[in-house]
Image (tube, rainbow over all chains, first blue to last red; front, side, top):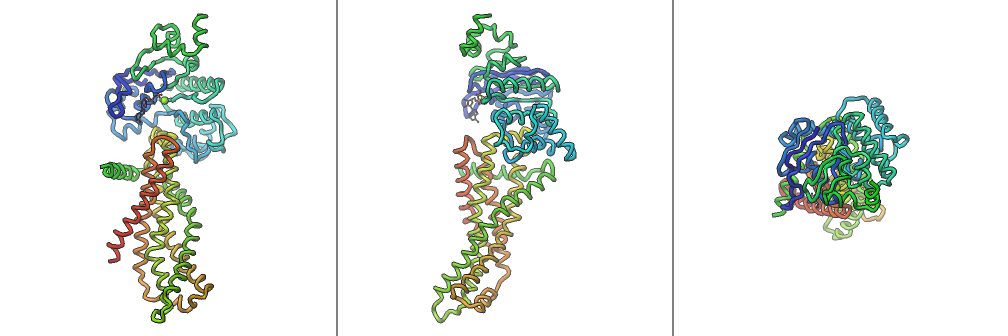
Length: 250
Length: 246
Ligand SMILES: Nc1ncnc2c1ncn2[C@@H]1O[C@H](COP(=O)(O)OP(=O)(O)O)[C@@H](O)[C@H]1O
Ligand SMILES: [Mg+2]
């Protein structure tokens, strides 16, 4: 479980996050939703330490991340897998080398063991026969899969995904979403997914936090979010005609 | 004021780059990778400009030394000293600052804007160490080799083209390049080349590492990396010449 308490963050005097608290449960897909620019990525980067927080606490299974020194933070980071918005694959390395990379860095496995583990992870994300291609040679959906395979290679306890299906077609989006959910449950990972896509929320969201202009505006489950009468949440959820139609049918 | 900010941030980055590596074996193979990329990859351009420069210096000085008071072997001396003292260490480094520097800055800058550096950090890897340290070491190991290679080819180029143009004789040229030869000059050139190598790798790496934005900013960082490393090379050329030769 990851718990954040009273996180605040501002960039050169402009407040971006304001006193946010939440519990991200283990084995669940925890979602952070909100409009573009509401501060979702900033919150995620604060949680993993890529951004410094101005105030607040971040607890990884009780270990206070904010109070640790550089070396201790590094140890927690080794338990973290992260999926970046653009994939962030190393473009000088092949697909297989990308997945092998964290294993080379942090394990003492032999070359063949590393390759086996990489192939296992690539198969887990349904990606075979792409081992020797470079990131520039594969599609957006395949890049996301490789990024997931790389993230799970070292068996993380925490998985962060920043808009895992941005730029993907609806069908591939659902495949990626479900992959994240399956992996979360299979390996009992604490997963945090950022999205602004209501389909994903309905598809895989267990716990949902809605951020509005840097504040936590609402939290609940995917069943609750469809029934809430909070005006900003409704605005977000029922932004599309499709969702509006869905609501009238309920 | 801005200059102090950059100095401070540069030194902090370099200190991080020289931090304890996660895994020595990976760093060593990274150094070889970079030597191949930055060093071997530059042999061609260094060879071409050195041969031509040696040839041009030979023909120009022969043309200038037409006075009967100056012996023709002075051409050999001129080529040797200009290659060893200034051309090979400084001009070759300036050209490498353009070639290698822009590639370092754009590679690291692209990794920054596409979040590859963040991805390294998240894995618990010291990104500065992993990316920058091998480049600096590879450059410092390989630059002296390139410089010696350049001296050799420059003097050879002068010989070949000097004879072909008929401006100097075989005997005079060889006598000239051995006349009052100070081995210390080569040492001086190698010291310069190692200092310049540090600048060529670290300054563009700094500009790449702190890129923010997108492709446009990567281009800007690359330009800045080349400009600042070239200016620093010239400044250190002056400082080191003053310190080591005078
Ligand atoms: N490094 C930064 N420096 C200054 N402002 C930033 C930085 N990162 C994000 N912001 C600002 O913080 C706000 C929230 O951004 P972000 O967290 O990326 O939003 P989201 O991911 O929800 O779309 C935006 O207004 C953005 O301009
Ligand atoms: Mg974002």
